Image 1 (cartoon, helix red, strand yellow):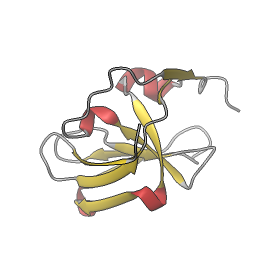
Image 2 (cartoon, rainbow, N blue to C red; image 1 turned 60 degrees about the vertical axis):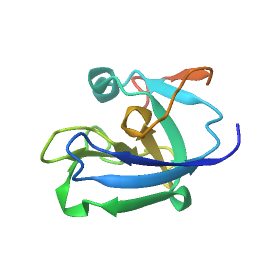
Image 3 (cartoon, rainbow, N blue to C red; image 1 turned 90 degrees about the vertical axis):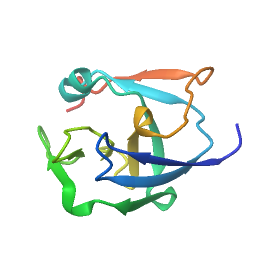
Length: 117
């Protein structure tokens, strides 16, 4: 798949962003928070991510090692992205927040987050 640019947002539109990715794979994660939010994610380097609007509407949640930074809209509660723990120069983008994105045909890899120390 060629690298494409997508716009993304939370449900209420307070948080808006754009990403560029060739979507080599999508991931799920079995850590305690990812199981609960049930997101399907794509890994994007920070240089391919731009927050367009809503920095003041982002709430941050950290747990366990307090390394990964999970972001949520403080108005609608939707999780649009997080800064990754193992590769902190990358973000995990919730692909369900991307406009017009269809995950059909993209391989999905289950990552093991529950066993991370």
